[in-house]
Length: 175
Image (cartoon, rainbow, N blue to C red; front, side, top):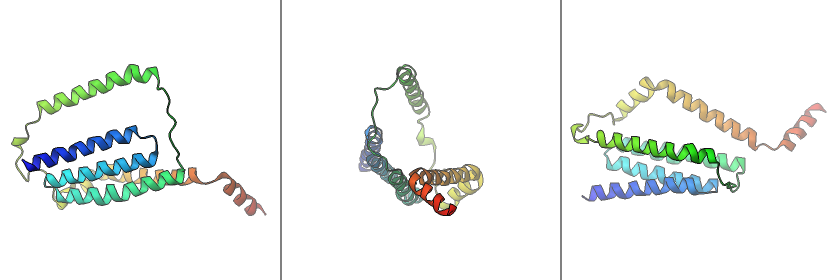
C-alpha cells in the first residue's frame, strides 16, 4: 500500500511539474520544472523496479540534457515570453483535437490495462536488454537524435553570437 501511495505521489509531482512547465513564461523556470518532471520520473522507475533506467534518467536526462537546455537558454539570452491572446484557429481545432486524443488515450488505457498478465522479468529492463534495443534495434533513431541535438547546439551558438563581433572579425581579416 505504501508503494502505491509513493507511486501516486510522485506521479502527481510529475503531472504538476509538466503543467507548471507549460504555464511558466520564463524559460529558466520552465527548464527547472522539466528537471522536476524528470526527477519524479526517475523515482517512478525506481518504484517499478527498473534501477538502471532510474540511473540513466538521472544521469542523462535530468543531468546532461537539462544542463544543455539551460546553457542554450542562457546563450540565446531568452527573456520573459510575450503572451498573446491566442488564435481562433487554435481554439477551433486544438481544443477538440486535445479532447479527442485524451479520449482515445483513456479508452486505450482502459481497454488494455490488463497488467497482471505480464510476468516479472518479461520486459527488457536489464542493461544488456536495453543495450540490445538501443544499439541494435533502434540504432538509427538514436543516432538521428544525437545529430539533431548537435545541430541544435550549433544553431544556438550561431544565434547567440553578436553580429557586431562577427563584423569586427571580418574587418580585421580584411586588413
